Length: 309
Image 1 (cartoon, one colour):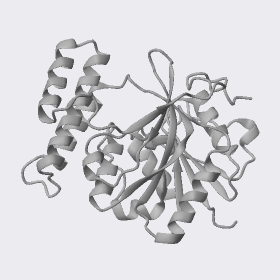
Image 2 (cartoon, rainbow, N blue to C red):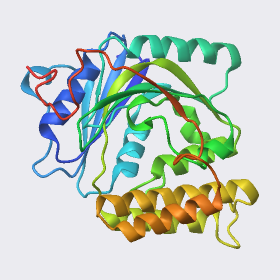
Image 3 (cartoon, rainbow, N blue to C red):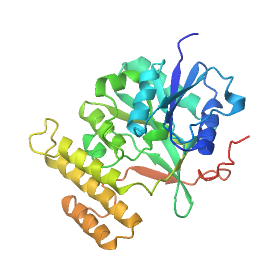
Image 4 (cartoon, rainbow, N blue to C red):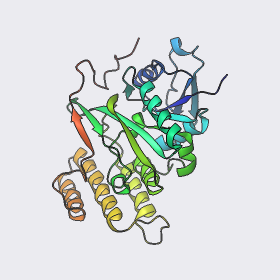
C-alpha cells in the first residue's frame, strides 16, 4: 500500500453515535491517499466502526486498555500516523463537506515554498453554545506571537489543526499530565520555538462548546502549567508580559469554571484578578477572531442525525 498523503486522527471516548458522525464526515472528504486513525481511549462499551465502513481499509482503530486522556490519545494517533501531514477531529465535532482538500492543498503549497514544519494550519469554525445551541461562525486570526499563545487557544485545534508530523518531533508530544489546556501548552511551546499559525478563512468544522468538565482536571492543569512556566527554578519559566498574560488567562479559565458551577463570588474574584494582571476593556486578552453568520443549512453539533445513515 502506498504511503498515505494525510493521516486523520480522531480520539474518542464513550461517544458511539457522535463518533460515527465524526468518522463519516472525515471519510466523506475528497482527499486521496488518506488514512483515518480512531484512537478509542478505553470507551465502555468499546467504540465500533459502523458496519458499512468496516471494509474501508483506510480506517484503522487503535484501543487504549485504560483511559489516558485526550493528550495520550492524540499522541497515539500521531505515533501511528503513516503520512507526513496530520489532521485532527474531535469525536463530538464534524467537518463540513469539501473543506479538507483545499486546506491540505494550501498547506502543501506553503511547505513546498518555505519547508518550515513549524508553520501549522487552522481554519474557521462554527461554534455551538452548549447552553443556547446558538451557532456562531468564528474566523481566527493568524499569529506567530508568543504573547497570543500565552493568552488563549482561540482556533479550535482539536478539529481544525493540520500540521506536519515533523512538528511534533520538533516540539514534542502533547503533555499527558494535562487533561485540560493541553492545546494551550503545546502551542505555547510551538510559538516559543518560532512556530506560527496560518488560517484558512472559511469555516470547516462544527464545534460543540464543552462547558461542563471535571473541576479537578482544570485545577490540575493550572497547577501543572504554573510549575512549567511560572514557578521559580523552572527551565521554561516565562517572565514579563508573557508571564502576566499566562497568569491572566489561567484566571479566565478559573472564572469560567466558577460560572458553570454558579459560584458567583469565585467568578468575580478570578475575573478581577485577571483584569488586574492585564488591564483591558474586553473579557478576552486580545481580539482573536472575527464573526460571520453561519450558513443556514448547518445543524447543531449535538444533533447526531446529521451525516448518519
